[in-house]
Structure formats: C-alpha cells, structure tokens
Image (cartoon, rainbow, N blue to C red; front, side, top):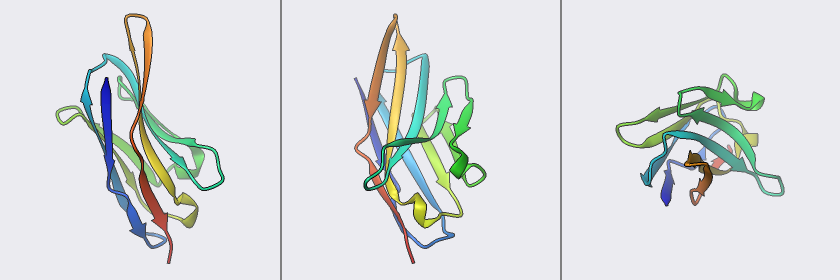
Length: 119
C-alpha cells in the first residue's frame, strides 16, 4: 500500500502562485509514474502534469510554461509549482501514483486539495 497526502492548496488571485506538495509513504516502486490531476465542477478529471521514475516530465498544453512538476527522492515528495494562475485553473487537485512490480500494476490516489483562483 501507498499513502499519498497533498498539501498547499488555497485561494489565490489571478496571476498569483501556489505550490502543491504530495508526500508518499508505504511501499516503493522502481518503475512508476506520478501525476497531478485536477477536476473542476462538472468536468472530468484531467491529467495536468506527470513525472516518471526516470525523471521525464509532461504537461497538458493549458499549463505548459506556467506549471512545473518536480520531485525530491530524499523526502519521497513531488511538487507542482503553479505560476500565473488563471480562474480556469480552479479545481480539486489530486496526486496519483501508478507503479509496477512483478508484473502487477498499482494505482493510488491522494484525497485532493482545493485550488481556487479568483479576485
């Protein structure tokens, strides 16, 4: 089992910044993808950013150049630095871990953290 705990959400004005963090505990995986997803009211959950065990990152087009995902292996955390926030970034943000071990796939989610961008 893996536990994921997000933090760092809140209310920010348009153009502002927030930094989300996700702390992972429990079992570890040599091969994994960690992602930040978001879900706005009435919309489907979408993948915003991801990082692989090899360190490769990817972003949805709407956040490229504004969001940066990083990880700290010593602390078992991943972060999402969000700059130049827009009202359309308002959503609940979820941390996700997909891991593979001995031919089995595993999928874990955090509880989510609310981000609201409003003046």
